[in-house]
Structure formats: C-alpha cells, structure tokens
Amino acid sequence: MAEPRRSSRQRSLVEMLAPPKRKAGDGDGELDAPAARSKRVTMGVKAEDSIKDEETSAAVKHEDASAPGSSSRPALDAPLVPVTRREFVERYRVEGLGGAEVYYMPDWIDEATAERWRIELDALPQWYRPHLTVYGRTIQQSRHIAAFSTTPGLPLKYSGHPVEMHSPFPPLLADIAAQLATPECLGADVHFNHAMLNRYEDGSVYIGKHSDNVENQVIVTVSLGAPRLWIMRERAPRGAKKDAAANDELLEKRWRLASGSVLVMQGDVQRRFTHEIPREPKKSAGWERPRISITFRQLVYPDAPTKR
Ligand SMILES: O=C(O)CCC(=O)C(=O)O
Ligand SMILES: [Fe+2]
Image (cartoon, rainbow, N blue to C red; front, side, top):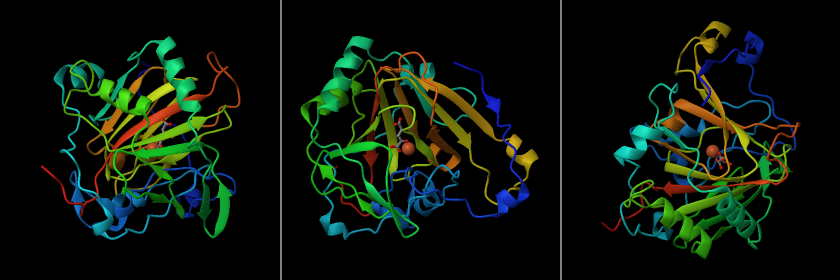
C-alpha cells in the first residue's frame, strides 16, 4: 500500500471562509441515521458532530434526518460489537491515519467469487437512483443504491430523501454477512443490521467527500468490480487555524479498493476523517465492469430498546 502523504491542496483564505459551493447534479454524500440530532454520546462522539461535515464543491452536504418516534424502532436482536479479533486488527490496520480504526484486507475473496456476487447483486430489483433535495433544489444522485435492513422499521433519511428500505437481507447479502462474521475474518460476534449497496457504473459516478453519521458505529465495505480510488482526509480539529500551512499538516491517504477487498471503519474514524471516491474520467485496468460496494453497517439508534 502506498505510503501516507500530506495533503498538498492549497486553499485560498476566501475559499476557507466562504460556505462551500454547491453544484446542481452533484448529489452525493453520507448516510445519516435518523437520530442525527440526538445529543447522546455514541462511541465517545456527540452524534450532532457528524452532520457538520466539510464538503468539496463536488459534494452535497446532507441535512440530518428527522427522527421518527422511538416506538417505531425495532429492538436489536443481539449486541452490536466492533471488530476486535486480534489477528485481523493487527494485520490489516491501515498505517498513516494517526492510529484511527481503519482496516483494509485487500484479498478477502477471489476474483471469480467477487464477479459472481457483483452480477447477482446487480440483478436485484431494489436498485434506484434517489432524488435528493439540496438547498431547495431537487437533483438526482449519480449512484444507484439499494438498501436493506435485517428487521423492518429501521428508518433512514438523507438530503430530504427517505431511503427505500427493504427487509430482510436478500439471501446473498445474508450469506456474505455471515461469511464476514467468521473466526477467519472479522470474528463471529460481528454482525450488522443494515446494508447499503452502491453502484458505480463508470468513472463519472462518484461519492463526494463526507463523513458518515456516527450512528454508523461500524461500517464494513466489500468492494466488487472496478477498483476505485478511495481517499481519506483528516478533518481540521475544531477551532484550528484554517490556513494553507495547517491544511498541509493534515493526514491524507489514498489507495484503490480492490475487487474482493474488505474495508472496516469504526471507533472515531467518522469524526476524524472524511472519505470519498472521486470521479475518474480516465479508465484504468479492470474498469470494463462497474463497481458495486456493499456497506454493511451497525446502525445504532440511541433511543432504541436493545434485547441483550
Ligand atoms: O462505495 C463505497 O465504497 C463507499 C460508500 C460510502 O461512503 C457511503 O455509502 O457512505
Ligand atoms: Fe460513506
């Protein structure tokens, strides 16, 4: 994997002070769980922090979602725990991100299996391109998505768009989740209550710089198909001087997410870093097929009852 490098992006003071520019047709960004306004501390982070994400002009900030009454929320079947399996976290931790809990396993499954999964997931009937409302305008997101929860009643909304949620997981997704939760991979205790599929047809489809909401306590991404660039950038600490020199000090790391790879983000990663998959007009090797990502998530609603 490439060595970490410092961001060299220089931004003018005017750009720093001005609110981020928005471009029509650029609807993309993070997934907000409905409890975004909650003041409750989750994993040591105030949930409200996550909605103040920084954005490039190529990304659209998602408004936080309105929280439906807790009575509509299902109980969790089992505790949701982060990935702690020693062999996994020691071997696959991504260096150069200041100790953040980011793990990358490039070769979880072989290419033939990845291709079979990609084609089968592509054929699911639940795919659609959301219409988002951003600053009063309706735009269509560049990615197709399909969202699933293990139990009905896990509501999700972003940029004015109530996500079309299907339940339960289709058999292949349930099978992939089960294969992740084995003693050979993430460990048998790790399971998810939500999965979001993203489809990147070609290099024009992207996801803008964003952080996911902290209600996403663990996000495990399985990449299938075209290897796309993944960029993680450290967010400036609150109240930090926002000049070019300070910006240069922030960590940045980029690599390609291989087909068949597994990426884990947990702990305070969303608070400390943004992530993005930029547009790539030039095709590189392996791009004769689209990319589909599966983001398995542990969505934890602060006021949901838990069955323990
Ligand atoms: O497609 C990916 O790998 C990342 C998607 C993502 O960041 C998201 O859905 O929040
Ligand atoms: Fe994300």
